[in-house]
Length: 241
Image (cartoon, rainbow, N blue to C red):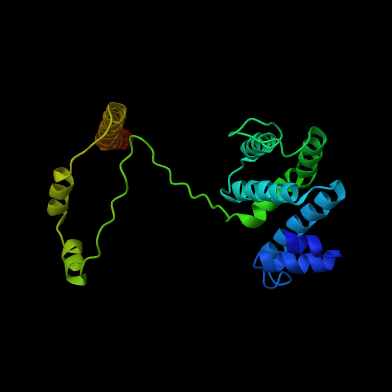
């Protein structure tokens, strides 16, 4: 703090502050540049308020702890950080050893609190975006009551050829051997469909069987009629002769 106190302008103060914070080249690193701006503006505020070296050191330490709490998690914790900052700040405004000390006056506490709220908390999400890692959420859904899909291992070409060469009877046996796990509603629906199909098939079969007999009867009737007419015409010719 003594080196920072001896600086005469802002540029010199930023150079000393970058050396103390071990910031090499803030122009090439966004985080280092933001950190340097954060503490340099805090030092300018402390000089404007006429803080002593102890007060300036404590104000920078409070801001550093607040920034660490913000960057500790990518989740939103602005309310927790604000409660932490106010509790630690007021510990330096009331003389109650060993828990607190009256380092700041009431006006200085209010001024420091307003400065932090109007600068750091106003851009809280921006600080969190820069200094915390990006969070990516991957969801995997599992539905109750459904079996997970089975991954069949890759088989050889010879085994696949043998499976394809199975006879229909063997395929039926394999199908029957597989356990059927169906609900009661599916079973009822399946039986209803089977009965309706069997009924329709029976009706169609009756129609197919009855149709040739009807046609045969009509043909016989036509033959009898033709015979009767032919016999009648022959009788008439005989009478005329």
